Length: 138
Image (cartoon, rainbow, N blue to C red):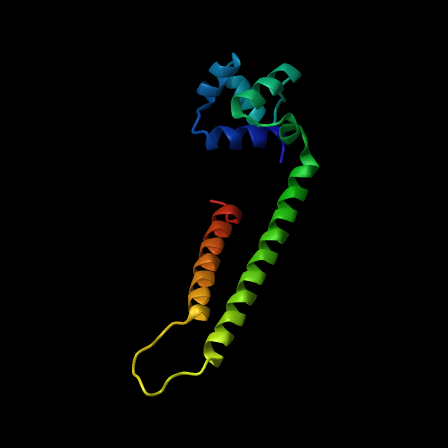
């Protein structure tokens, strides 16, 4: 991701127009457009100002390679957490199913394993929703 792409992404996340950002940086809207189109790049002073406006570190704006590595590591971490959650759900499900069922009553009772199973299922669903929002581009 280029500096221009990052500026555009940050601006849109803050629901700013190019005019709004230009006013804050004391530059023209056309300058912002050129940065976002990767026709030109901001000078050092403007990079510092951009980072202040968006409350980010200059390393984020200037580092091209690190951004991809961080996203890849985050994806791998998310997949590991999801796999562990699914594994735990399966284990609790097995524990729930292997408990003796009282055949004399027609009521369904949920023991502590069932409660854990339901909690893990909810957490896995929430985690999947978060991952979809994080990794699926609009």
